[in-house]
Length: 131
Image 1 (cartoon, rainbow, N blue to C red):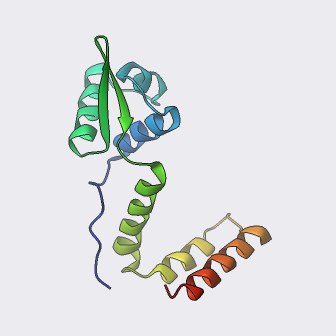
Image 2 (cartoon, one colour):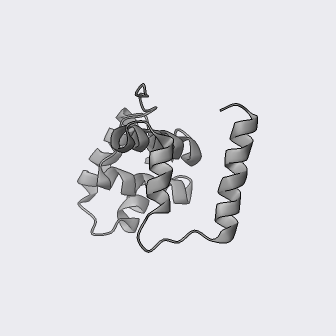
């Protein structure tokens, strides 16, 4: 299978934590991020990480007086889809069926009847649409 290029550069663990905070809040200042991070680094370190996220295209800022307010550049669902495509390519050789099989086999996570029915309906819809 051909490998897809992700929409945006992959994120480090700390960058993912910052993005999660910004997505949850909708927008955030450096202070907001610092206050919400577990085991936070220094203000300067957070500011540098947010700048990296801006440079990578994940965040943009507006100015509110002297304060920069950061917001995501893309909807969380779109970024999640891109990240999942990257995982499928990297760990499952591009095989969606292998990735789904791994999800179905996760230890300690059992899908409900409703979730299985929903997955079945999505598969049936994809067949009808010729995907």
